[in-house]
Image (cartoon, rainbow, N blue to C red; front, side):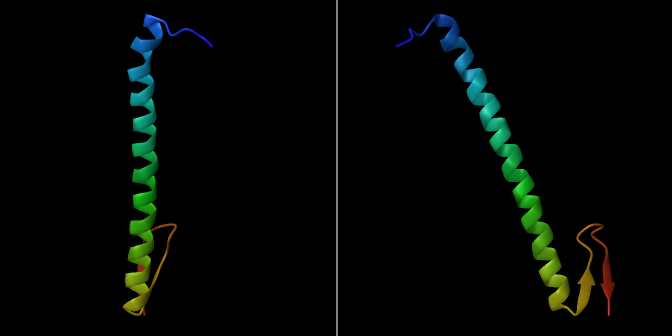
Length: 60
């Protein structure tokens, strides 16, 4: 078993901060995907089409 040094204890919060920042980034990306999908469904329900690539809508 490896001993934990004081350096390890100082670096741990930074590692946790980096992991939290990465998790937040992943969640924000997923939220954007879900919002885009919801917009697509709303537009289709309203009788139009929706371009996922451009975000443009075309009313029929």
